Image (tube, rainbow, N blue to C red):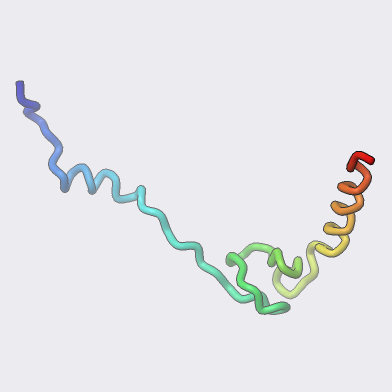
Length: 73
């Protein structure tokens, strides 16, 4: 038996038109010139809109201290 209401390729693709992926837009950080996503914190220096938001050096040091403490001896 044949499917009477078969969806053509055009109808199928129009239905799926919003499934396409979009490219991530990148901006240059005003502080360190590294690329980061627009309207997001720069993960290289921790600034957003020319203000220091995260102290990444302290965060890395704390993570290393925690790792050294948890390491078996």
